[in-house]
Length: 167
Image (cartoon, rainbow, N blue to C red; front, side):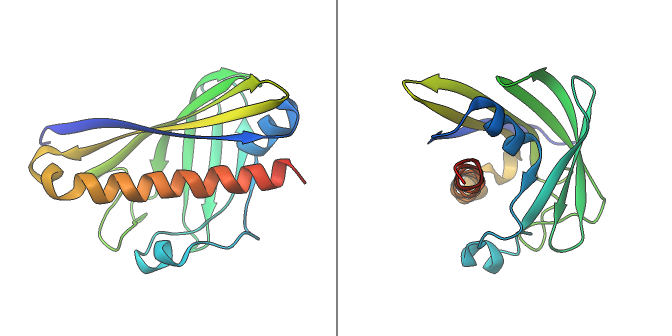
């Protein structure tokens, strides 16, 4: 495998809800009813509809489901209830985004996701970090578009979590 250029992006949002409720919304996600941005559809990025914890804690599992019938399993690698958890990805071999990218095995890869919850004044802040890589020889052309798409995708996820948490 060619050398990969490793990157991390991070987005955050303030939520007016209890930490316990927020924790539930980031571990067991239900976002099927939320409008998916048109530009993700145009780019053939599948819409996430839900994710559920199968087993809590380190070495636990969460399964994420998408509107195209695909899913991927997340292996939990850190777990501090109501504070942080991180996970790696295991996708079906046919899971693609952007028409051509297998985002877990190709020239662009998503390696890990991490959520952090911190209290700020009377509200709580959620941060979502994504660790990804781009093959060095494609970095010059894919770096900016992938960064933009991942940042917007994080924003979409965080905003839907905010809306479900504040209901």
